[in-house]
Amino acid sequence: MVVAEQDPLPKGDEALADYVHRLRTQQNLTQKELSLKAQIHIQTIRKIEGGQTNRLNQKAKSGLASALGIPPDYLDAAAKKVPLETITTFKFCPQCWTPGTTPDQMWTDLRSKYCFACGTGLRSRCISCNEPIMSLKFKFCPYCGANYKLSSN
Image 1 (tube, one colour):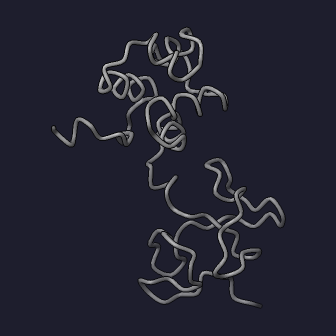
Image 2 (cartoon, helix red, strand yellow):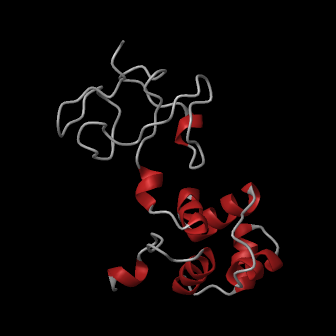
């Protein structure tokens, strides 16, 4: 088994069509078998693999993710051609977040850029050292010690 060939992560600039096709062929599935497994119409699979669409509705996304054995965020990353790091890092509102608590579900959505409650820009990197925030268990950056919350002025 070659790990590189079985890698379920979307490659940097891999289009959604190529990504779905690669995963489908790795699992030795036909388009029809994938459509049955994902419980979506075969024409949807053909449109995706044919590059005719980069937008997935919730049913298609969750069905494909389940059938291919990947998180739905991987499909989002491939559709938007964004690095998976954008998906896997935490985003939070420096105004509303309470240290030690999990970030609000609305903040972690791929499309979220601003806090839905106060309008502050969401943060996914330390403002001091620019390292990605991988955990919000504590309120300080493990690399430089900077506080994740905005300073009170």
